[in-house]
Image 1 (spheres, rainbow, N blue to C red):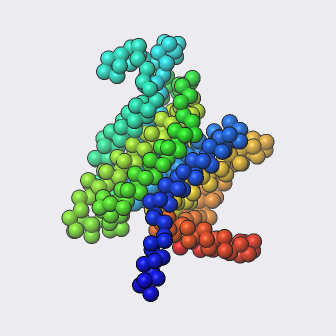
Image 2: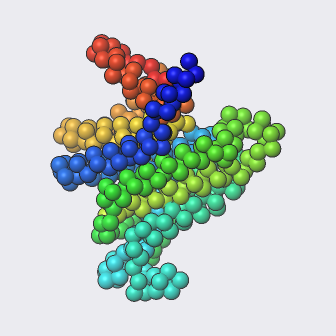
Image 3: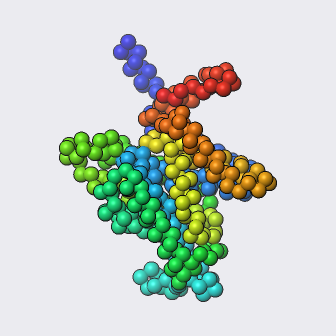
Length: 360
């Protein structure tokens, strides 16, 4: 028995090789889609990737550290405005009433390249998380949610009132179009990998211990503020990156875009997909972005504006009633995901009858 097990283990493909193969296959499929699909569909796929980054990063804070944060849209706003102001063409700054860069950021005739600007956008969002996180992360439950929601309101209000910097409610247009599907999914891959490494480290285990029982975690010598702040700051960094990518994809940003609606959407994606899982946020973001763009023509033709938000909210209620752990749910690993798909493919008959197999 032991010899047969050993032989099977020798024949088994290493997990790292499988992951690398899956990544290569995914980018090959993405390249094929880029050649075949229209620009509009590729735009939707890019938006989906940006929301995957935002939802996966929120999952570290909400799903693994147990902090119910509603300030993610505020971090995305910081990233969007920071990358826009750094990369905005010098020749158009006067026409759009935008300030020239100070000497510290390169001087009046300097325009930042895209990658450094995106990194700075993430760093500024992380810095904002340190400022707000240090005082509010001592709160718990809905008190923390309300405090982070207040942070989001402060950021959007500042974006409206600081007209010399952000052009106020009019927003900024003609933003350089740097974001494409490759930038988005490389960053999505980096986000998933970093979060995965964190949750499989001592830092991640400390965060999950805090989520499960703060008092017990503290009695074991875990510094609650340190690990809460770490999850909050890392989540904010990737939210800032997502905001920067969004600005250079949409090419126009306004303060109201980073308000309650965006926060609502990201939280719903996380809850519906499955908080506290690696694949759940990806599934939730992909599902809701697809659903939103599929319903948009119906919403416009019937003039039922707000239909998409109603469907999102109804879906959230259904999930909370019948599957509160989300569509994926549980502690799903890559191995478990493979088993789930095999069970799914092996139970086609059941699916035709309208019953779905339970995930592991």
